[in-house]
Length: 316
Image (tube, rainbow, N blue to C red; front, side):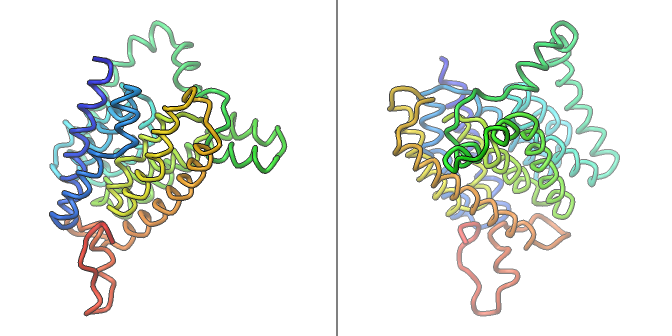
């Protein structure tokens, strides 16, 4: 029962990713990306073994983006967005991105999206805010994710022997700067290419993981589906490298005591994530600035010389 919510959410996330990619690429690529999400070792390990609910929150975040721009259902999208941060606060970085596109959609879209989001957010967080505001501040808004140095910037800083005050800044006040960067990049992408909102959400969530100073195998779910929204090869590379990281990590003595092999895989996966995010930004910016949603994969086709067009979609 503990594992069921996350595992069921992964199934629906695969369907959502399929629909997102199908509207922007070929059916073959959409099927490949959907299957990639369904069989991602990262999600199997964290949802099916750990039973963590991060993937549930991520599923609702992508559902909100899909409902807002592809299904033109802003009220339902607002509800989905509220559910995403009601389960885990992690997708909060995607909320301004969703609001930016709702604002671009006009007054009616913004009002309906805001109504759905505000009503459910008040229902979920209102009692907490009224009764235990300090607990909300300390355990949610200021949650640092433990003091382990296993992942990303903190891990690299530790290996390089950088001064402790710098590492303390990264883990302290510096993580607010990281969140601000994630939001700024996501909002910028959403404003310049609103039809590519799912891609902007994917980049935002992936960037949050890239800049995260917290260490946890379950955090790898933040970008597992996101990379398949960006492209099949990006998703496959991420799931392959960080899938092994998650599987071997959970097989170790403790998920917060990574072996040297897991640490090396994690470092390689961080680089794979960074390359995938650069690819995602380039693909989004390569789409036409106006008109119906175009393929995240056909962006290369739009600018390639005639006769050299790629045959795939997001996989390219």
